[in-house]
Length: 186
Image 1 (cartoon, one colour):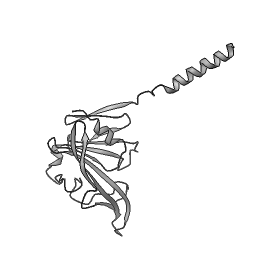
Image 2: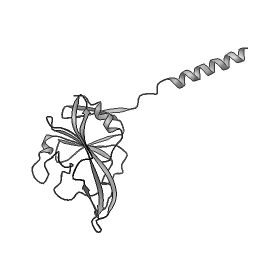
Image 3: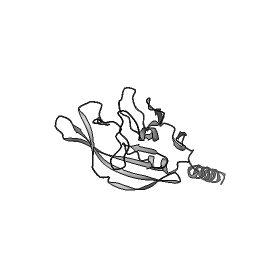
Image 4: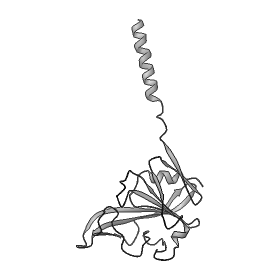
């Protein structure tokens, strides 16, 4: 009888610990132009060297010598309407800040460029915290400069707040990002 009670008590303890909520994941906060995002601790933030109005957030481990790393961009008013060789952001085309051909984000060589569809795949509104952002998805592809053939297809997602002049650009289709942005605080 004592043995049965001991096994029953052990089983009850085991079931109670299995149903307990898992420990909260480690997070960190990012602030940008009045917006605060809570992101996984492993995401790395870098400021673009030419402006304090541009953050690159890398969402996965990335080698020091790797040119392009999976992540997203937070772009503010100064970079949306820039001067010099940067293009002004327009909602009728995907965000591409340079004036020339962009190198393929998925390749480290210089033999491939990017091109996008003329019209967005999705044109709607999505939450950016308590605000509603203009949301667009653009079909993109990497192509060979030599042959013109497509070597990789991807989707670029953009959330834009025209009054705040805040743009979020995700060219890697991170599955966690939409939830992070929906929980943004202002």
